[in-house]
Image (cartoon, rainbow, N blue to C red; front, side, top):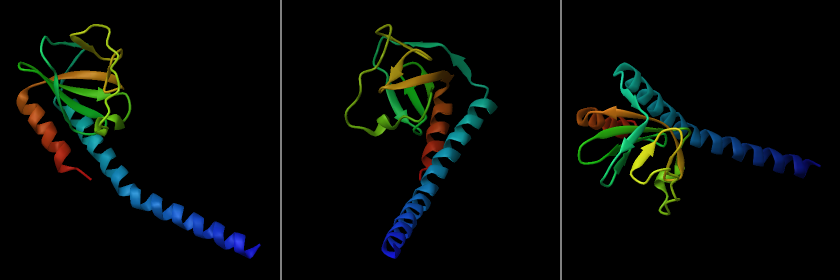
Length: 138
């Protein structure tokens, strides 16, 4: 019985250490998302229901929950319903779109992740958000 107890204690210790090692990364991601949430509220960004684009939409990752989307004329911040780990995958899942050139919040997906909301931003604000995401990288 003592061998099993020692093995169980060792396994529990390894699990706890693994949790402690990953905790700072999770904490950094949560702080970054909180900072972006605060920026959206303080800047009083205008929420839009849809993005109409005739051209290609480009993107820059801020965090696993936020993304900057832009075309030649306009900049937007996209908020996912939950963290989107598919942003870093090499295989891109198919998007759900009701219309070809329209990206809608609450109904469509981007890289396979559901979109909670879209906010219109100026190019300078987009640059600030990108720097905010880079400054608090884990």
